Amino acid sequence: MTDARMMCTTTAERRPTYQAFQRPSPGPAVRETAQGTWFLPVDGPGALLRLPSGADASAVRRMRRLELPGLMPIASVLEDGGRVWVATPVPSGPTVDDLLSHGADLGLGPGDAAAVLSAVGRALRALHMRGLGHGALDAAEIVIAPDGAPLLVAVTGGPGHREGDLVAWAQLAWVLAAAWCESDPAVAGDLRGCADLAEAVGLGAALGALPFASGGEGRRRVVRSWTADGARAAG
Image (cartoon, rainbow, N blue to C red; front, side, top):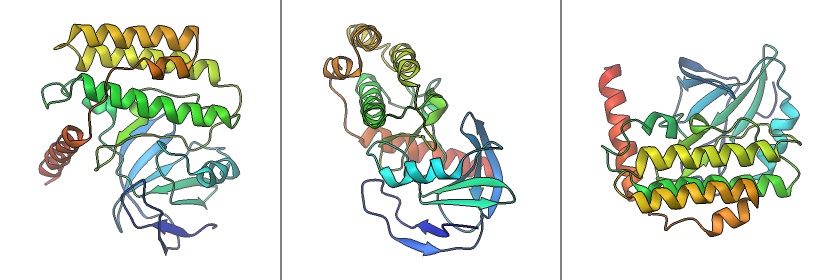
């Protein structure tokens, strides 16, 4: 087993500190995504992600070393029983996908849609500038952290995904325009226009044309509500 360290802080922007641990301690599985299977850890906060069979641990460690803003922080990369595990201080949810159906009812709106698209788009640009891409971007790969920050889950990356990432970001813009911008058709139209820009010109032009992004307070309230509902269901 390698790289036996674990991040203790839950704030993505703060430089992490670590505590030693010996092996993954997964509790219940909570979701399946293209990145792998998410588990609740039995011995602390955050989440554990078991990558698909055949995942390259060295690629995950490369991503971890980059520490790019807007990406879900990777606390540790572990190999156990022939499988690669990622430990993160960030809970596995809610994802944007979790909030698409009822996010507007919980108070999410056009500014939150713009905030998600901005954060994800900037993270993708940072990856692309380093010759990497995501390759599996959808609403389930974006976690809303407890501080309200949208974080893109990207644990391996690789070359050759740039064009697909642009298409996926544009599709996300359309999805969020429909889900969270019903109260403001003008902003919904602006987001769809940004989607067209991304595919025609690139993310730089699209990000520059995004509407005003809201702060994180509304998203923090939604995360607290989502977490409380999950705790009541589990209890």
